[in-house]
Structures are given as C-alpha cells and as structure tokens.
Length: 174
Length: 164
Image (cartoon, rainbow over all chains, first blue to last red; front, side, top):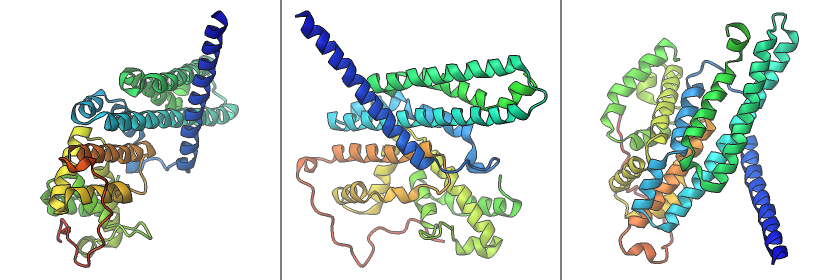
C-alpha cells in the first residue's frame, strides 16, 4: 500500500514537472519568436510601463472570468482559462528575458564605470534575484490555479521589474 | 511623440473622421483598412492632400496604435458587446459572420506593426473568446454542424463603415 502511495506521488510529481516545463518551454519559444530587436526609446508605441501595467490587469482580470462563467458554457470557460494561462506564461517569460537583458546591459556598463557604488550594486542584484524568484513562483502558480487569483502578485512583480529597469537611478541618485 | 505636422493631421483625422464612428472596434477596423497590406504604410488621400503623405501616414499609425490599445484593454464584456454591434452592422447572418471570423481570423490584420507583443496577444485572445461567447449565445443553431463558408459575393454586403 505504501509502495503504491509513494509511486503515485513520484509519478504525479514527475508529470507535474514535465507538464510545467513543457508549458514554460512553449512560452519561451513563442517569446523568442516574437521578441525581435530592442525598440527605439521615445517612440509613442514604446510606452512600456503603461502597456505592461495594462496587460497585467487584462490578463490577470477576474472580472473577465466572471463574465465568461456567467455568459457562456463550460466549453467557452475552458477556452478562456487556456487562453489566459498561455498569455500569462508568455508575459512572465518576456519579463524574465527583459530583466535578464537589463542586468546584462548593466553589467557591461558597470565594468566601465568609475563611480560604481557597491551598496547600490548589491541592492540591484538582490532586487533581480527577488524578481526571478517571484516570476518563478508566479509561473508555477499560474500553471496550477490560473492567473485570475494572482493579480496582486503579478502587479507587484511588474512594479519591481519596472523599478529595476531604471538602473541609472540606482547607480546615481539612490 | 509626433512631429507637429503629423500631430495636426492626427487631430484633423480624429475630429473629422474618428469622432463620427461610434464604436472603438469599428474605428480600429477602419484605421487598419487604410494600411497597405504589402508595405505596411498607411494611406489616406484626404489627409495626404492637406498635410502631406508622410504626416498623414504617421498620424494614421499613431491613431491606429491608440485605438488598438483602447480596444485591447476593454473588458471581455465590453469587447463582446462591441463585436456584437459590429456583427449586427455588417448585415451578415450571425452564423456566417462567426464562421468567417473564427476560421479566417480577419481581426489579425487589425494589429499594428509596432505594438507591445503582450498587448497584441491579449487582443487576439480576447477576440477569440468574445467570438466563442457570441457563438454560444446563438439560439438553437449553435449545436448544429457548421455550414461551409458562403461563396464570395461580387457585390460586397458589408458596407464600408466610413466614407471620406
């Protein structure tokens, strides 16, 4: 009996990890395909903070979920959940890639900087680690329960991410 | 933002054309229809005549981006309502309209060339879900097998929503 329970638990864990990794890989592949070149700054369509905040509230909205479950049947609700989960995982993957790119650019600049402030560098590093952990946790949670109950966490992660993008503030003024 | 001449063209376009279109989805589809599929360049004779073709193209691109953001961020309830109104105004039979939109996905051409990819995905996803909700609302016929798409008509049934 115990053997059966342990085997079931192991099999369940393996399946969970396999399916999660598969979803994450799909999201990563789509993001790599649609990523493209780094956009020029200052253009109207590149209002990233606004776009990202709006996207978060749209993807993680529970109002939409209520509407679909009230207005349509199980089939449409299933479609809604699949679509939202896919969007959320892709968004998380994009944020992770952008955060890594910001850190990479910052490392390049830091190598040449003469006024480097170690305390701020450490602060930035910990902010990055926290962000990666948050996005990791968010991805697993989205995969398990869907994005609708995670809006607060997503908005928090998004705010940390946009704070981190402003690396110059950390180096100079903060 | 936009250069002064493009901004003037945008203001002109917004007040003289866009303001006469009641629904955000119709505005989006109209602006997308001014874009050349092959080059991605926006063309509008009236605006180009008054402000120059470059300023007109920039103004239309900006207007497209702005309206696209608005439509993409509508709640599903409002988007579904917008889509229903658009479907009604097309004068197509709802089943045929939904077949065409679900199979051909013509709404994909409404996505601006330069836009945040997450917003673009949200738009496409929301339209898919809104179409599914409208299909679900279709009385009785929704459970029957889908009919094939109707053959293309030489005389367009859907009126161009806007005239310049």
